[in-house]
Length: 254
Image 1 (cartoon, one colour):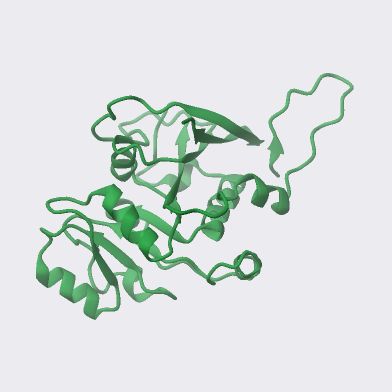
Image 2 (cartoon, one colour):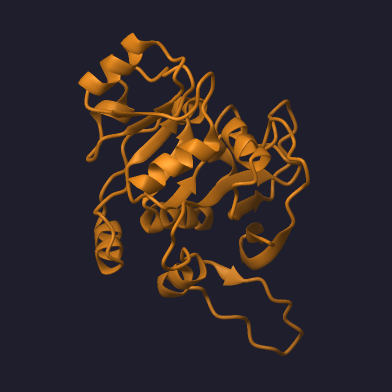
């Protein structure tokens, strides 16, 4: 169960459990968007590790998974880097009863597409990202990507979008998604994609789950890449807790 993080004095009642309705309100995207609005979802250990044994699943919890699924339910598109999609064995997003009900009530398509970012167009045409999906996967790549790879993905049913010359320009990628009506963007990593969004100052909200684990090892941090000219100040918008896990939500300060 997810609880609002409130300090409770002896003799006081515990805070109420946060139900699905409250979560929808808490994590809702702004209304009437005229541009792509980017939410980034990540989980890390308390010592900053982004993965255990190469995957994020070892850091997660039922509450974290619930918020992760909600991010997909409320989004127009799920944005992910190819390295993360490959390592986490991504497929197209599945339709569940809760997802269908929620998205229908909110006026959204039954399932959001996945937009996978790969400068070299490295997704194989027979990848489950392309073959096991209810809606065409969007492959965001650069002009320099081999034409044969781009053609093969198009032939396999993916939508190939060019955003940038030598490498993917995240700002151009978001413009392309917004032009397709995909303005509620849920970014699920990985660290290099998140780093490029930070560098370009394109992050509107960060949803970070802190796992009560000391992972150690050589796992990387949640963002990697060149720093922005000025670090972006964020405001803490909400805090939830469950069994020692913290679900933090930060929004950009203008």
